[in-house]
Image (tube, rainbow, N blue to C red; front, side):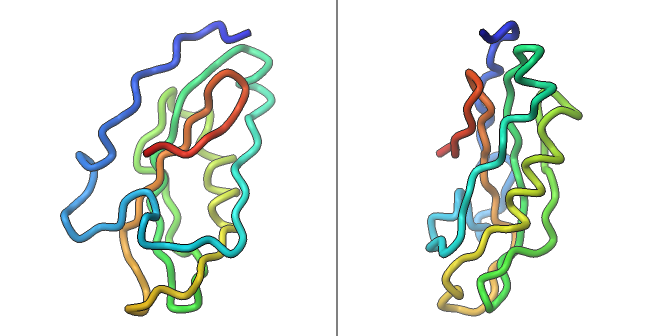
Length: 115
């Protein structure tokens, strides 16, 4: 059972510029799996989210993965980055894409994508 309140979802567009790709809506996944819920977070009933920033190269591989923001800090970053590092997309039509952002929710012991 969760022991912490789930923090309100962030407004992801507030972290981006108009030309950034948000939520991967311009990307089609070839290989995609959500991160594991961190055992430490699960065992202590912690919930939260992470905004992951990434680039997608012309081959559809993720690059330059970083955590834009995570709440609570220090709990979900590692597992989020590891999962995104293994994602593979259809090669973007216009070549590579920079500054894509994806919201990962860690809630009630499960992980989901944010809108």
